[in-house]
Amino acid sequence: MTRILASFTAEFRIAVRNRWVAIAVVMMVLFSAVLSAAGSAPTGALGADRLSVTVASLTSLAVYLVPLVALLLAFDAVAGEIERGTLPLLLAYPVSRAEVLIGKMGAHLAVLALALLAGYGTAAVAAVAVDPRALAGLPALFRLFWSSLLLGATFLGIGYALSAWSRRPSGAAGLAIGLWLVAVVLYDLALLAGIVASGDGFFTTRVFPYALIANPADAFRLFNLAASGATAAAAGVGGAAGSIPIWDSLGSILIWPIAALMLAIAAFRRVVP
Amino acid sequence: MTTTLKLSRLTKTYQGVKALDAVSLEVGRGERVALLGHNGAGKSTMMKILLGLIPYDSGEVQVTGAAPGSAAARKRVAYLPENAAFHPALTGREMLAFYLRLRGEPVSAAAGLLDRVGLGSAAGRRIGTYSKGMRQRVGLAQALIGRPELLVLDEPTSGLDPVSRRDFYTILDGLAADGASILLSSHALTEVEARTDRILILSKGVQVAAGTLADLRAQAALPTRLRVRPASGAGPALAAALAEGVPQADGALLIEVPDGGKLAALARVTALGGQVADVDVEPPSLEDIYSHVSRRDGQ
Image (cartoon, rainbow over all chains, first blue to last red; front, top):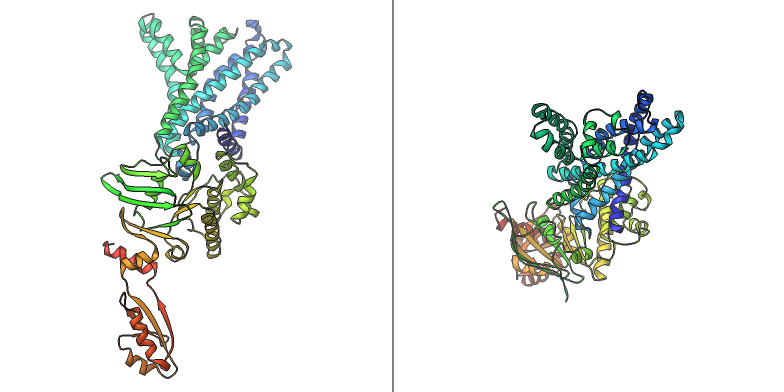
């Protein structure tokens, strides 16, 4: 435990010094503020409280931003140690590679949590300030917060694995951006193309729901939209939220972080310093 | 003598090239052993193997009685890598606190360790601002954590100024006196000569010489040099008496005496009586032995 704490403390300090904390916080606050300002229009039509509507918008934002921030925090984790030449000494210490990674993940999750608190907090304050009923949306916001952390943990783990595989920070950064594009942007486009081609056929009815659940970003979006009352406020993939049981998407966002961490540990164990 | 480190017939191959070929070594408690060899001779490879960082092909390795890289071995072994590197964003104190926590030692020990290596005043500065010598000292400070039984030091004095080098060896002497075993590699042969108990010379992964400096001298059978200084005015007479002597710039004569002939040569010199002002005996240095061994190996 002290060894995990050692890794956590050092990594968090580095994140503060390298201004990752500041960058992540500013990014989340800016986007959240813009969304709360722009997200006011549908309120009357739906009769939902202001914050619930904002949560729906924040969900769409988080699907893009949280994986991106997580991958940015993670890509250097192993490759950076290799490049700086700090890995041989670290691994000569009585600490397991899993402990090193878990400490790093804890620190990076703390950075992400700070950014999310600041961003979502800004949105909450803005919503409550103009609509007292918005307090009713707080549970949805809380749900968005912890599920965002789980989504972040997933992409942190995958980011560490990429970092260990590529062994060079530049290579790891490239892989991370590529992964983000594929998992968050292209995956949905491909599914959309599949639906258009298949119509009401086999793909749409049998494959599509599982394909959505299998992608951690889509599972995250489904879970938050299905769980919140504001499903109708979201377009696109949100429409599918009703047809997939909430337990399936919840299961996916719970399993992914563990699977990603195990993948990262396995990849790190293969690194020869 | 209890054995801290035991290698027997250790062999490691990298893509068909033998990095280490049947190397054997035992290091006892409180012993200081130097590992010499050209770049690429296999010194760092050997160190990394006994730390459990890289696997080996065959042979036997025991580190403090445990398998290399096992939790038990890593607890008792300290390492200073070649060109020690640390995260530039952390201060010296924070970096040591990290290593102290990894070893389960109290973080408060950081200040004392940094003082011991002469970094007390820079403890609060980021390592990114340190010079190479200062980083090397952070490396040494972390190697001192928790009374290790074996210290593996890869070129520990590179980047250190002469005074720091002396301080460094003083610290090592203290550790060895307390029973710690030390295995270090170095290119600075003169310091190794005076400050280690035994020497192992590697060449292209093969152990070409091993033993105390006296053993190595005996094995190499290199000539001893006598430097004979003439009394004033006795120069020409002395040169005639010692015809094999090579005159030096300062007027002295340099005589190379084959191994085993030292006493006879000295007797000849002392028989010249008043013509001789002084005699210096220069046994073959480690540097001589090292270049002899390396040449023999075709390098």
